[in-house]
Image (cartoon, rainbow, N blue to C red; front, side, top):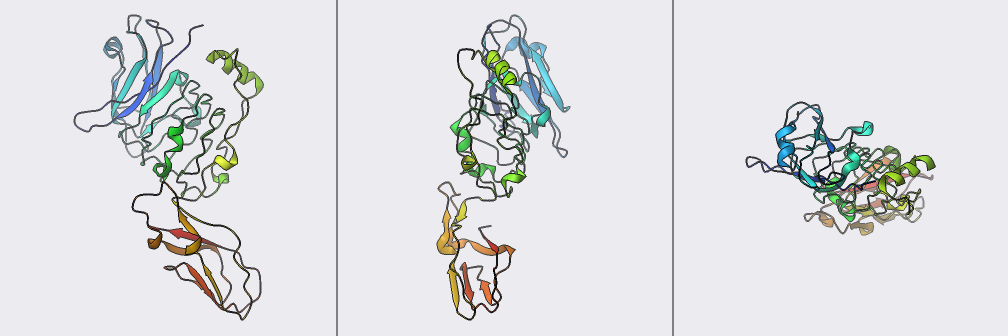
Length: 329
């Protein structure tokens, strides 16, 4: 049974210099294969794209101009050149992917070379079912807000480029099942900016495994792993997930010293704050504002937003639970 190699790469227009990239390959030289691209609008902006299928014969026979949202396929002619084929997309593509529904032939993608600037706002389901995907571009677009199901079923993926997206994820609001069944992925994502997603519970199924033994056997056969073991456990653990609700700045979370009624109290929150190693270049620990975002401080005690110092004389005994946020706008 022939092995497949593929991936996906971008193109550019002279006018806009827009680039989105991935490499896609046929199972064997000169054999017919069909590739599918899920090109959609985002409800505000529609699709207006030009596709270079990476082969002159394919470009002559397949749809190249796309102005209607949907899945666009190309069956490479028998006489097409040898793979891998580079598929380049230029123009405007707000959403690449089809959410949890998925799309045909995603399993032929092996590499994403470049996301570029095609106006992407969603990569929901972009590589759902891309079982041979091993590499993803480092230039994750900061305009993207939805990466739900993005790598669901990408069982071969374990690329450090994804870890290094870091602050580029600052606008993402949905990470539902992003790495569901991505069995090989082991990278720590603690450098991701997940400020818009408060807890793991709001990223339901972020790294869950739903494949049963029968499904794994079928996948091993498709990938030619009959002599190897595709481990049926998730390599990503809770410790490797993003630091939910955080972005570039952390406050040490150890319990503060106990206060006593009638006794002056002071706690320096700023001394507990630290910048992440990959924080933006303009991040400044001295320009941070502090505020209470949940709960209440004890009566008689207040937080100075500029200095980060909680001080005062408590007047009422009790147990007070509160959350302090450090933020640089």
